[in-house]
Image (cartoon, rainbow, N blue to C red; front, side, top):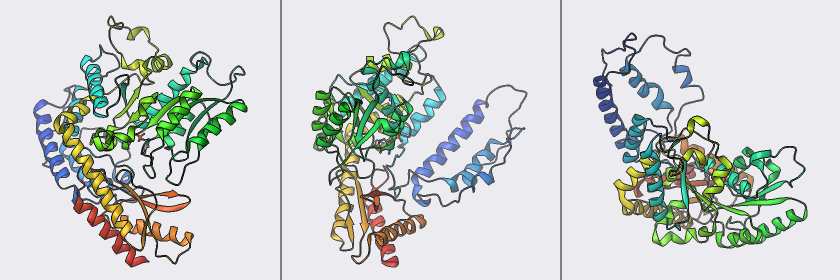
Length: 488
Ligand code: PLP
């Protein structure tokens, strides 16, 4: 970036002058435009070693102002090599989260406003836009009107709040008395499948259940929770003095994107009077496609549901949405209004600080608003539909190849597979596939990750990036085959 003569005047006691901001603002937007246009020229997975970035940044902060152009230049020199490019079309690892241009612009505006949406009064536009956009999103997902929504940063935090609300619902006065040292209540149990995301365990840990308070339910051959096992576990626990209070079902598990049988699970939850939380963090957005509506079968009976627009709706991280039927219970669990936070409008408005642990809140709904309006529901649907098509295309290539095998069904766009030449032991197959994945990733052309299914090393390839097109998936498959031929 261009070198400037401007240097901050420390005696001015003010912010960057407007003209300087304008100049660098334009420059930076140009930079971002080129970056997004040419994302492919970078390796999707950073090729640096641990410590490489740190050693290029001075250990002490500068006492004197630096040229802002130097700071921006260092983005190219120091930061870029250490970036794993989630925006890259060949980033097919984890569950991708790509930033669309309207989402990026909304982030810029949100930072410029820099409001704190803790109260309606502290930024009415933030509160009311959150209410409206979450109602739009609810409609897009065809969820019933009784679902009330709130934005948190991540699904981990959304689920933690849902679990805390579930605990509040059983009315054991945790808010007043806590959990530790109490002999007047049984120990609490939460249930989820062996394939539930680790955020559920963390949420349970955070609210004081301990690992023993989480019971993992086994899955069938398609990695879906077995409802009968859930019923049995709840019955057995009740007999042994536990208090079952919450079940978490997943729509789109992290390893394979399997869908737990929510209709059956919800019946059990109703019978047993336990809270049902549905984790649809990644795959939930596909419910906005008429042909995929059935992925939300039974979700109408859930007490809460998490969907992350930041995972597969092209909204820059972070933005997670929790819907619940019981906003009053969530409020009861978390509301605590210090005197200085009381306002004259409290009886008429929603103050989002009442529904969670955080006081300060960013203006996140702005990016939901920008993205939904820019693409329209139709635009988002078309991209999701294409990702599902590409995911199935890749799964088909795996099925057709005599020396590759699919290790799980592909209900969305995530394919779990491995190479299997047919003459190796399980241990050797693990080694071969780990080696294959590492070799492919080392090329700097593709980034894929793995999981373990039934103790077997399995490679995952996920199509969910806004810039990923058929040619990228084809190239990925070619690269995988090329390295397989080299190492087999
Ligand atoms: N739930 C599921 C099913 C996930 O796959 C993930 C992450 O991939 C999470 C929750 C956690 O998401 P977050 O990073 O938003 O906390």
